[in-house]
Image (cartoon, rainbow, N blue to C red):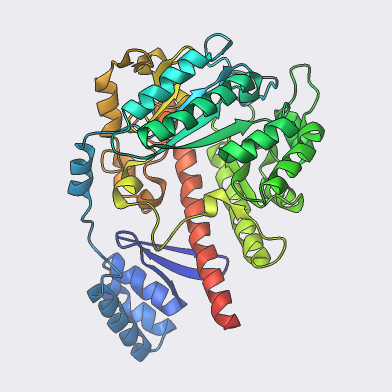
Length: 456
């Protein structure tokens, strides 16, 4: 299986099963396309009106050589492997601790309903958090590195418990030969020097929520009485990012129908000096006025192309930056099993409510159909766990023949369920945007490789 696309002046052919990427001229691009769809002989005369016959012959010979080397038209050998992988004993490696089901902002697109998650406002106690960490240790098998994300609502509303749980985790590391990688996600309202000092000492990563330009951010992320939060948080975020040497953090935004020119928001954040940026499409009901729609896709594709070109231009200068959704590893990256089975929600990764209930991930919290158990009694609904365990790109009809399957891992199970009623479904708008981001990411790799070759 191959995937061909053109992006910012590059003709690119991706061999899906091997991961080989070929940047080719027009002749090779056209010939590969005809060979792929079995129309070469039917279109030979047409091709010969555009290209010399001898060059077409050379292209065919090169295609055969690439096939022989396993770089083009390779077979899929992973389907049986991934189903065998799904039968393995599962260990838990990550928890999303909902340390606070409460928030000091009223973000309009918040799936957590201002932190309430379809339930009640609550703060996690140390006892519940301690039991969650104990569960993680007990169910992590031989795995040493464990991940814990302090999430909300707004985690800093319960900062004392965050500190207590980190201290407890550090004690348990020595006892059980584990290593905790803690992460904090915050809107920045309560961020101060004490929090920054603690985060820089204890947090492997910090996620800072900001949507971009002031008018966009304040529109979607206001305080409950309507005032914007941009002016308050930007100086704090800049200080934190600099204090971490512009590493081990992300400014993380959401774009909606209110800023279909979202590339300008990414550039705005980069121009503020942020080096690690993630601005992601909103996931919302069709009835929400800010929801993205099918008709928005062509314009959004142009925005991604524009952003990719800007990143290539900035590369190697003081103005360069990383964009999370364009960061793919074409040479190594996650193992095949991980690339085909996804984030591990419901199996390796669980969300924990303030009162200790387990859900497959933070986006399922509050949906009682997906309540798995609790930190004191463990996992009770093993049938749901097994369903998530078997959810991979070969179990999803839409994903099975998609070129992006090795990069997106089948997408978000929560989005699939919310839009189709089945975790094996597909959220179509999200899929199209993901495929576009992958194409842009590959183009950037090609452009930077070309740029490096010219400089040598």
